[in-house]
Length: 361
Ligand code: PLP
Image 1 (cartoon, protein in one colour):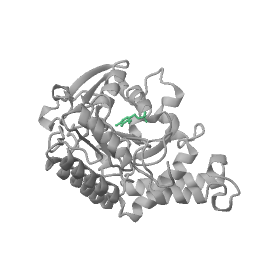
Image 2 (cartoon, helix red, strand yellow):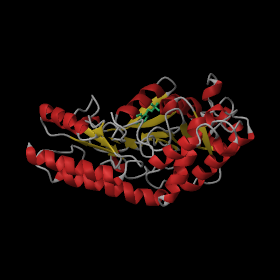
Image 3 (cartoon, rainbow, N blue to C red):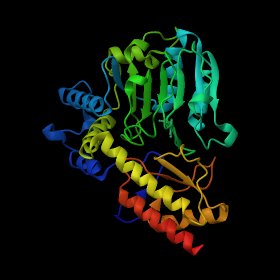
Image 4 (cartoon, rainbow, N blue to C red):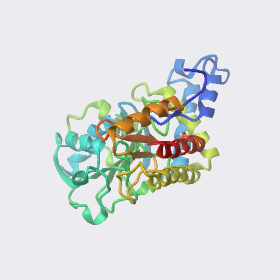
């Protein structure tokens, strides 16, 4: 390995903007004259409190979080939310609806079954999760405590292009792999959450946006640390929060604002994805199994149809300065994760590489 940074197409943890890493590096031993690193600060200190408050305020502004919602900075990864959401919400009616469109919604669905009566409102398993069910295909129960779905399926490369219409049933959504890449009408959600390690910050932080009136109805055995009310009442500081990750998130949000905020980022990420899909669709060798209209702008899956050729592609891509293009073991083929921090230039170079491989094989 040399000194050059590689184009890292990892599904997560993934690239952070270079400007953010450089800024964090420049402040790593002495944050703005405080004489210490953010990693060394008490989370109760004034200096850190300001970092926390500013990051929370910037997040609310950029995502457009309305009154009545609270932004929480938690730990436990997105996976902890698979338990936390049912523990806190299912007590309302004892029932919930789940749409299973990939690996992570399936894990969430199975986990929720421990806590109540869970109904499979939709599944895309019949076609190996290559599409997103349409609104008419959702079997919704008006008595459900909530409806759950995963906005972007990191492994299968599908993304919901609409917000389901659920009447008065609150929506819980896992946005781990597409948060901050497209505008979100937060008021349509009861809870949205995301692990930070794709579009926001290093692993260790989970951002939860919750409609405050949904908290306080947890099952009686809900652990203190898994109770949204505990975290709302203590503004995420019931215990030590992931301080360093929160600081980096603040820097990422500044960077995002410079890119034109979420609408600016939406245009950039869409053109990157379109470029890649165009090259795949017009190639001889490569195909993308995901149905048009369900394709993810964040995780682009493709293959040649030959396992041997796929392996060659991956091997040669590493030699050409790209990493982590191998598809997930459950899907095979290739996957290019092109989150917000992936420079357009990285995608252009990958497109050139795909075209050349296509011509030579
Ligand atoms: N949800 C989605 C959509 C993911 O892509 C991932 C991880 O890749 C997870 C949940 C699990 O996240 P964590 O590892 O933070 O628990």
